[in-house]
Image 1 (cartoon, rainbow, N blue to C red):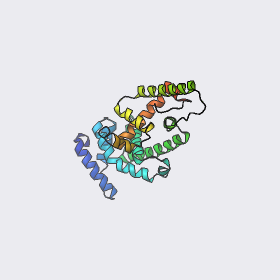
Image 2: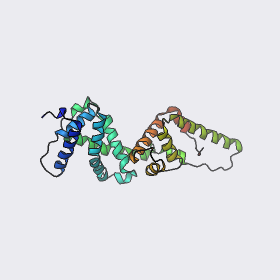
Image 3: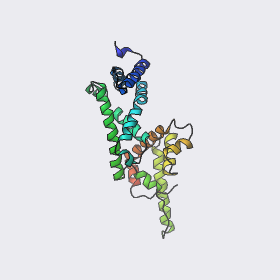
Image 4: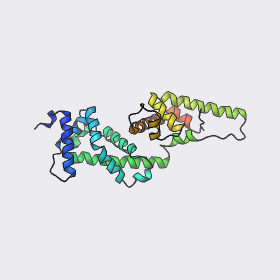
Amino acid sequence: MDISGLDLEEVVRSCVRESERYFRGQANDPGFCFELFRRAFVQRDQLAWEHLYRTYRPLVAKWINCHPAFEESGEELDYFANRTFDKIWCSITPAKFSNFIELSALLGYLKMCVGSVILDHIRNKERGNLEELEDITERQVEPRDADVEEQAMAHMEAKALWQRIKQCLSNRQEHAVVYACFVLDMKPRDILSQYPGLFADVSEVYRVKENVMDKLRRNCELSKLLSGVSVETV
């Protein structure tokens, strides 16, 4: 039987069925799930990728929950699940897919991605890289003996910073996440409730937040403005 010629929906149904057999300890055919991976990574089929995400997210969630460093990370499961799939998507190019000759190798790599994103997060958290922008924007400046000119300069610096941040944002989702996270100090689940209809689910809020953080950190001019500047809400 030529699996590559099957309709995608049939491949997905067969993959789910064979996976259930595998977890019950029954004889199973891993070829259907391997074909789903192939279509997602080699053909870059977006629909196949979405089915792949839905099919294997429960398994990824189980691995995350069982990871010894998950609890100390301080992050929610959705965050690491999305980062895991982002990592494997970026890592396995169509050319590199040929290095995986069976499903077990792909799943082993997926599990390795889970550990990688959790440990990377903890290392970055310890260095303060991921929270740098949040720490700066949440810090409130209490006027002491500064004269009017110094206070005016601080306000101008803060305003310039926020103008630069806004210029980096591409759409309403990014504007909402930046304002809600760094001005209102809201969590992703609260943002989802605050902006009904703007985000499909809390996972999308996490994705947007991560994209914004990466975008701001890559902006050299903005990095200079962030250095040594105390930001008030403007």
